Length: 219
Picture 1 (cartoon, rainbow, N blue to C red):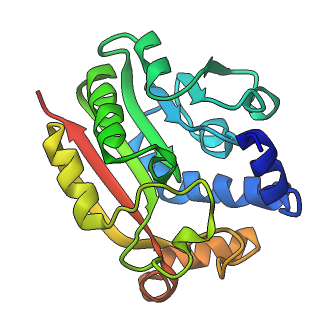
Picture 2 (cartoon, rainbow, N blue to C red; picture 1 turned 60 degrees about the vertical axis):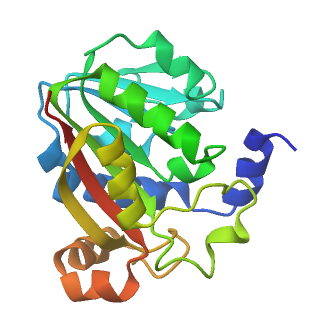
Picture 3 (spheres, rainbow, N blue to C red; picture 1 turned 180 degrees about the vertical axis):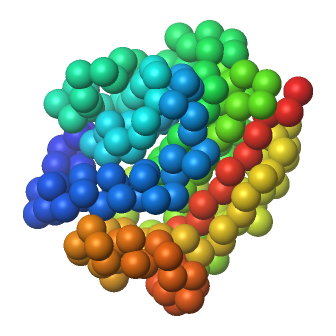
């Protein structure tokens, strides 16, 4: 089974309009603070493009290996299609102000590939540029993490920090518990409830199984 078929099966019963509404709130309430309106932003493993379609910036680049990304990207999103990390060679040094990835690194082949990808991210970022990562945290998601056939690499907020430091990043933010493991878990299914959840740190510490990490290229 190809990955596009796997993802079609996995998400066929998911309410995509609700997912888009949730990401609009997530971008507006939390993530936008890490991205300037003048930025060039790269979304790694863009998938359904919920992030890159909603973030406010000048130039948007979605990188993904699944051709279906074309069906989801907004008209102002430039698509770079190909296997990661090989396709990242198409992006020039210092071409981006910020890079974002959500639920992506766990799909890479092994930890060595994670380091290769992070090395490319650092290369394409301008000095001072940010990498923003939302990632399942194996410390809290260990029960359900391996229920997904395409999960290969397990990272905690500790090992994520180490990987970033090994590739030359400075760590600005580490939130070990940020979002629930999936949108099918106990994340509120209405936009106003998502806003309430994001404003309530105790709820995040109770339900959060994904980390939020923000790192910066300093030299």
